[in-house]
Image (cartoon, rainbow, N blue to C red; front, side, top):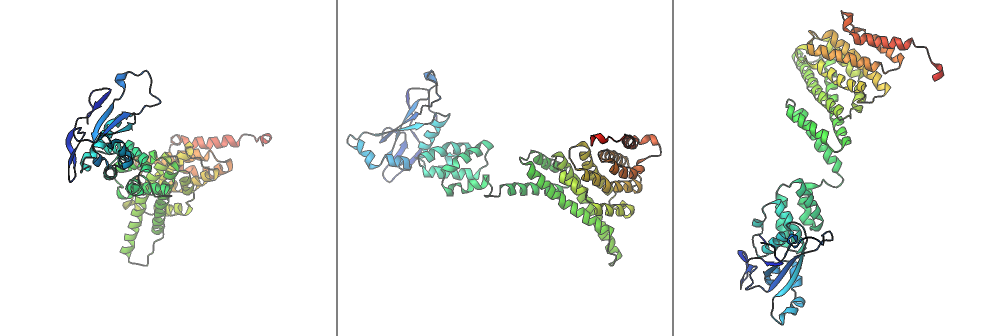
Length: 452
């Protein structure tokens, strides 16, 4: 409703658009000819208001003509209009005068007028057309104890989406609502008591599983989930979710390779071959899942446990070596060696770069367990594609960098296994020369017992 121009006091024009009908009379909102209550709405002063403000910037008070039998829909007005209050005005039969303060906030006066007009309406829901409107009216309906309006506002808010700002306003109003009025609102914005972290983690875990299982070949889904992980408020929760998925996928890959490397030949040959194919495909699929999970963990710098687990895979790496020495995998999953070594390369690079701070034991075991797999792949994967050649060279350099961080006795043991990194043209393996030269330089340095 439009208030009109600024005056010291102004009146709101009568309207017949919203009426309420009793058995004896039809009352119109703000009708001075039949009103028995005059309500003055005035703007309450704020302690932060300046005394020097111009009059044209001040809110005006508003005088409205109302009807007592309509106002009884509000328990607040009903109390004011009880017999002990009405007795003051019954002797002279003049309209009963009330005052109602309005907070000095933008739109507050208009919202109060709207709620007062809704007292005359039998169809409140048609007047509430947005969450913002409901949130403007609800505090006033609560103040005036206008239960029908409160119910209509709450019902509307239960049914529509909210912006982030509107959601905060809902949360601010919930303490003033009855328990039965808040049930649906709270269910939308709050997890069950004691389940906050579990709820978030379960949701995030479900999204991760969907990204790698339901949409394995849809890059934009994985990119979306990756962004959710990056932006997630709790790094520890994201870490637990990724580690849980990592452990599951790693277990599947290991079991598949174990069954492939140690097949049961007691059944039909064709059936055994089909099972072997299935084992390889399962290992390949879950290997790709592992690679994506490893990339996410490194990106979030939460891959320390993954590196430790990867360094403790003696039986797994033994199964891989047996599988890659066999020719059967070539026509079934030719990309399996690259997937496994890319996981190794990602983790090893993070260790060498200091993104993951691994202990000496973990660094040594990581190279010790996975160096033989790299060597077997180089010897048995042919023809070697440019991408594989680049991957092998990168992993060689990374292993040599990690070896350089180990005590000389450990480095001596591991470097002797790296001779296969050499090439036909010795000038093509400078990384190997650098590693050995570094070790010999250190070995030739005289002991400094005085530093011990």
